[in-house]
Length: 78
Image 1 (spheres, rainbow, N blue to C red):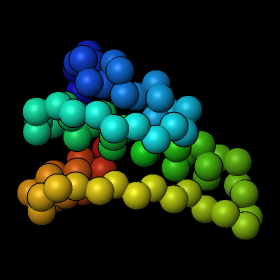
Image 2 (image 1 turned 90 degrees about the vertical axis):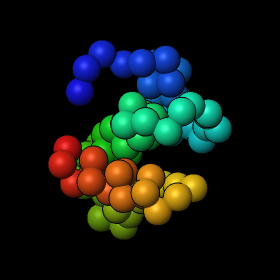
Image 3 (image 1 turned 180 degrees about the horizontal axis):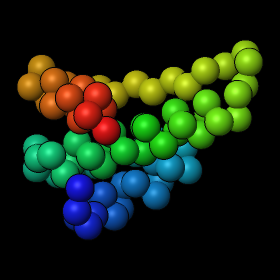
């Protein structure tokens, strides 16, 4: 993973604060990373707090099966 591109620079800070966003970018690995990386961070933060009544919840909606598979692969690999 290299330096953040435009969509990552704009989306990741909002997502890490727990905000919902709507963003548009070409379908690339960089766009997928813009929502996968904050999702992992949110899960790790929630697990670190060890909240007994609530576990991490992340919902990622993709427009195609291919994008969903790419996101799943990136989540698994990271």
